[in-house]
Image (cartoon, rainbow, N blue to C red; front, side, top):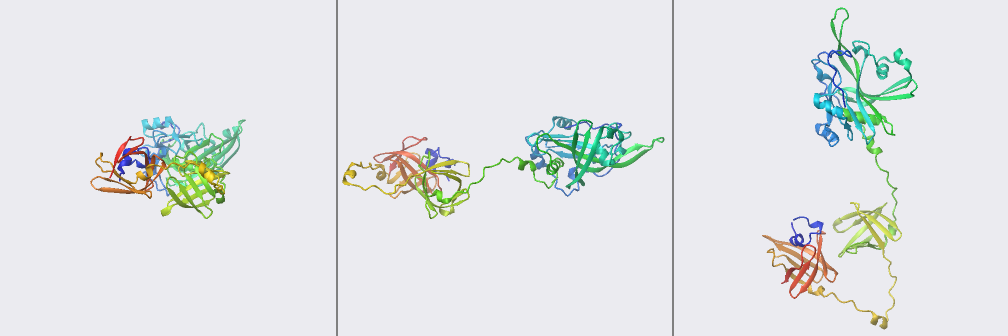
Length: 475
């Protein structure tokens, strides 16, 4: 409900503002592998029977929003003729990462990619999709056969590879969740390559059955066969921090779009350290504190019995309690306000929930007043009485706006504001003078207003930044 006069003349008061980086698919006939045979089962993430939770489309879009042109891409990780979809699945962009531009370009052109690259500059890691097929899947001996595949499928290196690499080891760790029905594993492969020192490769992915074909030598008969293969991501850190098991699990869970069961480990490591909390003794608050640079000379009084008073024009009694460094003020009707506080001698710092900092200076209390004498009393000039204190006590009406906006000021500091807009609206108020010509008033909901006044006869003129000499007539 509008308080009309405030909308007109108190515009400065905010409380009155009601008015996945790539390569092309291999073409059929390439000598690196045979075509996949027909299979009826599709194993895209949408149709997977995995117990892990698959990302929804909205979640996937949110994860990549503002970071790349796509939140997911389709990756093609096996050969196929009539059943390519068996080896096509959706890969998602992890939170905070971006797809490589080439991945997006190929994806736009072809609708799927064979190599997906993502990069996270903040958490300093990258991931590149890779496929490792057993030797059986090749029509001829591969000229380059990775160490990870040799150790995983064969358990040893061939003679040529062993001649160039030594101290080879491989550790396979199940990560405890599935993708497309397959157990996700982390494979850590270490070896020393010639004179280049120890190398460590991290691969996170799944083992799956790859359908392929081979032509029988001599007869040319086509045989449809199945062998083991790996699909996943090579991940590495280009920062100072190593990629732990939890980090690898989280990254691959994001890429596969399933719940890895691991909370984001990068979020925890990126948190800023905070200063230690200091316990504040409530006894340090006792006394009267004046807020610096306050328009209303806000004053806080803390008594030894846990009661106190905020004086900000009107008086607001409260009770208070201190827990570690948090001061809780409880006003009428259980209205509470919390501050983080610190006390440094005569300076009290209070920070509210919005981060606003209040600085308050302790006021020195006079132990007792000096004894008055007739001579001293005579030399003290009497403070002139505010001429408006008595004159303001009346009912004043705005007769020009058509809304009969009315202020009633009683002698005890209470009053009423009202206006007519089809029906009568009334708002009880309290008021006081901050100086002889500035009247401040407060509504029951805590909102406030004020104006400079001038009384000439039966007319009260009010002025602030919005209006000048707005007339209210005495009734």
